[in-house]
Length: 499
Image (cartoon, rainbow, N blue to C red; front, side, top):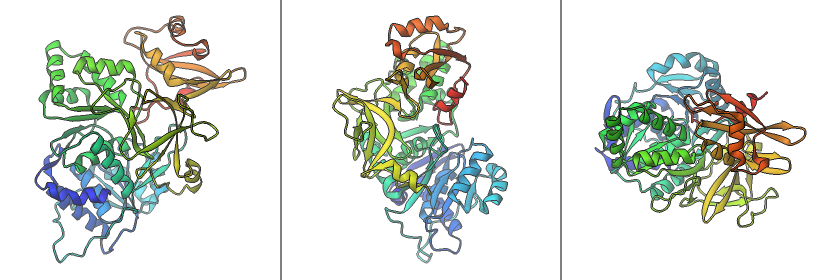
């Protein structure tokens, strides 16, 4: 369980755990700080008994000490997004009913009025971080079982109001163990962490897997393309994980560098043993450009807030562009058709998953929880097919599968074909309601540099690659696509561009 990761950290002692702007912090210091946080949260209580504790703390030592302290005290950790506006923060606080909030000194001002509205006690992160670990005479911290609720992360809200996804300590343990085994994490690893810490990708894949294996996590406090390249060039990093948008920005920054600097930082990538992409579909053009620049074949995987990671291209073996690989250890999955039956071999279907890593519930949404499961299987809403043993995503049932003229069309397939045009930097395909077609396929396109995509040229380009019923009926040139904080295109917002 996650609490086992905390307790297991004692075995790593003086090894570096967190590297942040304040310096390098070992596992002993991290544990001592976490115990201090736990006792500050407990005050005179013996167990928080799954009370929700929200926290808004910048990436670094204090973030992890706060997260671990909440768990040691028996609370449920609710990380808040640093970039979210006040209404979204208020929504999470009200939805979880958090009565304790921990904030960095720089975030306290943002949360004061929200804490008052939620009738919550606001504490400052780091104020007790130097407090020593408990002595023999200290009151014991609560015993935390595998079935205890550990964390609530909120869905991206790309298709509906965000829901709180509740994971237990047992769920987190299963997710961590699966990735540590599949990606061969070890105490010798050092990951450069640039991801937000309110989402599975940043919290579990990049942070908890590192600390569960006794590795070092170097936390930059955010993403800056040039800073990341400089760090690659300095060497010593073994892992890097990012969303496709970050890789696109890194490629653009690299192409703008002087030739000698570009060669030096690209050579620095040789010290890395693994680079991972996830949270959104990785364009094949980005996959190929990254391999050309760095020599690294990006490992694409598939997961979601509710299940952690389920599929991954192999650490050793062929990584096929456009696919999300094969089942991870401990994960069972199958494809089902619209009637709920197992899809025939070679047919597409909705991914259903079961296993110890699958979440417990949607917070205070029993109907949504019930509807998400069928006979113990969680329906992801994602449609895929299996080709020669590798899973290929076709998109979300609700937003990426367009029903037009009696056909079911994958928006991701059209997007992938369109990105191959030299005048297209990015694009989004959506379906809008249409009396004749049911849904009409439309395209929002971001141009490449000074190249202005021409509608007739793009139509002709796709016509040579796709069936006629897959071609967009309307085009819109935009400067940027609407995205959430994890870089995912928000398709409902794209649809609104056409209204």
